Structures are given as C-alpha cells and as structure tokens.
Length: 149
Image 1: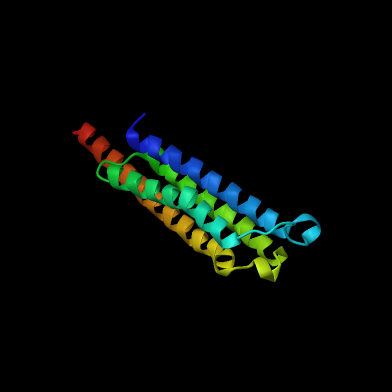
Image 2: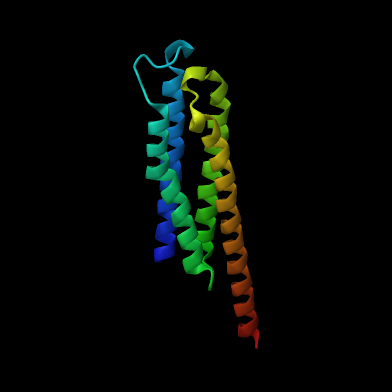
C-alpha cells in the first residue's frame, strides 16, 4: 500500500471519529428527556477539543494525500478521500438535525456553527477527491494511448 493510500485511510478513520464525537456530544447536550445534561459542562471547550483531535487532522490528511499524488494520480486514494468527505457531510447533516433539541443555554457560539462549517469542509474534501480521481483517469487514459503506439 502506498503512503498516500494509508493517509487517505487515516483520513476516513478521523472523519468517522469526528462524526461520532459530535453526535455523542449533541446527544449529551440534549440530555435525558431533552432537559440537558445533569452536570456542569463547557460545551465550547469540548467542541474545540473534538475539532482539534479529529476534524482538522482529517482535512489536513486529505489535503496532504492530494498534494502527494496529484502528479501521477492514485485512484484508490481519490476514492478514499471522496468517502472521507461524504462521511463528514452526512454526519454533520445528521448533527445539524439535532441542533433544535439542544437547550439555548448550551448553544454557545461554536455549537450552532460547527455542523455547517464542517459540511462545507466535507464538500471541499469531496472536491479534492473528485479532482484527484479525474487526474487518475486522465493519466491512465494517456498511458493507454502510449501503449497503443
């Protein structure tokens, strides 16, 4: 397995971890019976921690994978990057559906913004994955033309 493919696999893992962490945080903030958590919590601090542990590294690994393989294309890495972005977009869409259930006192600045911000970031990751896939397709078809000569 090439290094770029391994980085793309790590990006998928971090995307899954981010989605799971955000959904569990939102479930925690909704609380039992929709009354919020039963203890004192700093949602903003938890959110910063989750973004810095999983979301930012996932996006960075996707970008590094793209930069490493854009010269020659890597179809498997491109598909994995596409999957990573799709997981992030779908997970953040699910999380944004949970926002109305969170009480106002727990909706600090980032809580309401993060799902939409990372939906856009996931769309960007899908874009670079699609671009890498098109580079891979062009390189392969150009190589097949050379084989015919």
